[in-house]
Length: 183
Ligand SMILES: CC(C)(COP(=O)(O)OP(=O)(O)OC[C@H]1O[C@@H](n2cnc3c(N)ncnc32)[C@H](O)[C@@H]1OP(=O)(O)O)[C@@H](O)C(=O)NCCC(=O)NCCS
Image: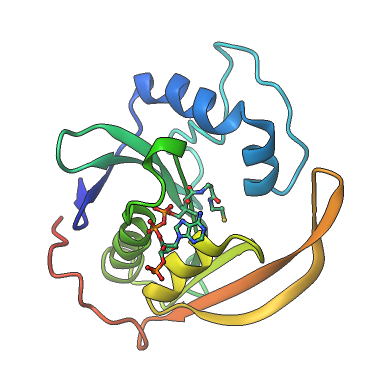
C-alpha cells in the first residue's frame, strides 16, 4: 500500500472491478472523456484490460484508490506508458463521482509522483487531459506539473473535437513535500 495524506493506493481486488466498471466505465460520457476511443459495452464476466491489467504488461502499474480512513474504494489510478529507456511514464486516474472535489485527486497525483520518482527511479512524468478538465489540471499543477503545450482539436469527445493539455514534471522540479507518504 502506498499512503498519501487522505488516500492509499493498493492492488486491484476482484470485487473492485464491478464497482469501477459501473461507476466509471459504464458512464458513456465519463468514459468518452477519459479514454482516447469510442465507448464500447463490456460483457459481464469478460476481462477488461482497463480495469484488470493483471501484471502482464510491464508498461503499466494499476492501483485501486482507497480512503485511508475506512479503506473504502474511491477510484482507480495508474502509471502507464512506462518507458525504462527514457525513464518516463504517464499518470492516469479516475475517481468515483461521489469522491470528487474532496482533495483526493491532488493526493493521488502526489502519491503517484512518489511512486514514479522514488520507487521506479523515473525522471519525467506526464499527464494529458482535456482542456476543460479544471479539476485534473489543478490536481496536476498543485503537484508542480507545468503546462507544456496544447494539442489542438486532438480529442473527439461525444460529437465535438476538444483540445488536450499536456503537462510534465521532471524529478528535479518535484518538491518532495508529501511527508505523510510511506511505503
Ligand atoms: C479529475 C479528478 C481526478 C480530480 O480529482 P478531485 O479529487 O475531484 O480534485 P481535487 O478535489 O483534488 O481538486 C483539485 C483542484 O480542482 C478544483 N476542482 C475540483 N473539482 C472541480 C470542478 N468540478 N470544477 C472546477 N474545479 C474543480 C479544486 O477546487 C482544486 O483546486 P485548487 O487546487 O485550486 O484548490 C476527478 O475529478 C475525476 O476523477 N474526474 C473524472 C475522471 C477524470 O476526469 N479523470 C482524469 C482524466 S485525464
